[in-house]
Length: 505
Image (cartoon, rainbow, N blue to C red; front, side, top):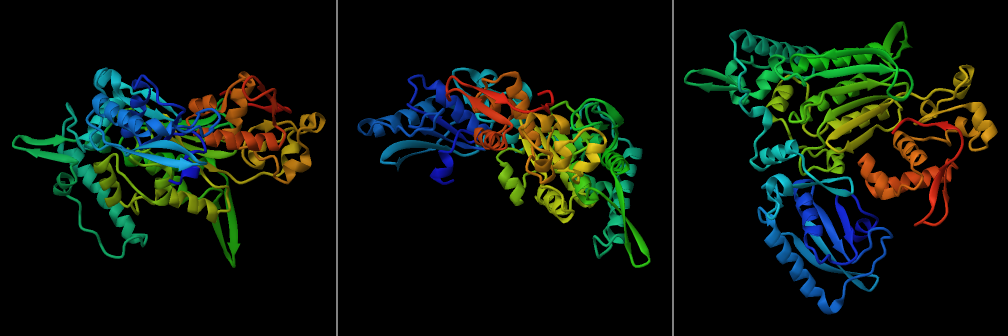
């Protein structure tokens, strides 16, 4: 990471300290949080609010670096050895403490113990880890995949083994028939299930792994896919809803069919042949749902949710990205498997075509359909993908009495007549796509309408994105006249302009 990128603002991977705190706990807990998540850099000599470079005293530079090293060594368990280096910028010296994602999780402060001293990074803040997160960190540190653990109390029956093998062989046959594989694939047997850690053979018989339970029954009540169609662009009135339970691959097929049933179809005539299509790429829809199941955190007892709005398809899964993996790395094709046994089974069934290509494939399909770029959102303990639907014309919306900025480009609901009279945005601007407001910007407006004195850092913490991201979105909202600053940077407040109807935050 270039120094110019580091000093842009605090984020999930960057924290500033103007001076080294006398109480070492104020920064060692951040070091622990970086090691427990995706790594990061603690920078001494930059103010966190203004990003002004003040530097550290040259006379005590090396003494300060030694103090940091000693505090980390004395306070953190297991032992952490970060890189601590001076760096000169604008003729001032700062100290950069670089922490890599730790391999021996969980890391915690010795003085507080594991249960009360384990911290993680959420947005631009350091927070105490929940008991569920600590358990996940323990598994990561032990290089254990939760789905490979024995499922206590789940009986392995001959019927369940045969059904799973039969279903996998059916999928494999379809792969060959559809041309996804050139050669015939060997038949899946219980021996394969053993090799993939789905079944565990003992002298007394077979033990089920958590993966086997997830692939054959309804043992875990939170292993569920909740599907819904909502009226408008926010959660509220249901148009249709359906829950899918049972084996994961059956949930995927059910949710996939639900979405296809509720999106618009199109037809294209090629010669004498009429070809049916959909407004959203089916391959991307399927990939979104598969990824949600394959990479979710099963220690979090929440359900996968598939929601269809007027402007987008939204798929949300419990758990952020797998440890040590950043969103940028995931988008570039790097992969880490949270659920190794399930990932292997999905791969053998042809549900996963290539490791690490899921997010790239979704973006590629959207581009091929001339749709807006998908939105990949990493929130605290949650990951969400938004696939945006095709744009709608202003004239069509006017006939219904309301113009949806989301439908025109990306966010919220606005009255055409109110926009005309309010002077904030004209219909012509809407037609030209100049008033595009995305979902993140709508959330920011909603928060500021309720508390006009919120800072960008506070907004970033609440919605789980970087402060820099918030600042960029605020700048866009100011530039199109939707948001205005009143007063000074420190004591002023924000005013949401115009008549845009805001969602509840």
